Length: 171
Image 1 (tube, helix red, strand yellow):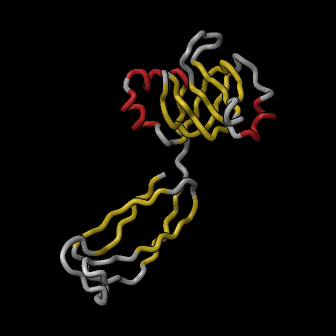
Image 2 (cartoon, helix red, strand yellow):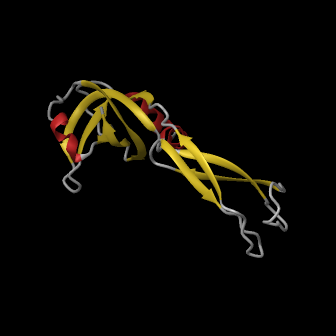
């Protein structure tokens, strides 16, 4: 998630760090965090001559956005139609993907289990939504059956060879 904070300070010219409250322009910056919660960021401004301002702490609350509900078929169709638009809409965002279990496997290199979702049960395809879980989810995944309709929550990361990848998944 990305949080944009604004602070007062100088954008051009000379700035006297001893004068409090002066505003010559606005500095806008962003700070990225992985998890929701309360964060404090300390900002110090430095002018061209190397003079520093006081440290200004900014505390902000990063709330988790609810997952975007989407069917496996809709996600695949959107990426197939326009990958750029789909990336802007879904990449690095939480999604709640609903679809039919095509297969349940374990990555032989990473040891991470994954579930491939499709839009219709029994559909033969080389394109699916691959939902990767932590290894600790294997017991839960062992109860799934091919053809079962499920909703899986995770972070949409990328599109490769006609398939959408969703990582960090859970039910």
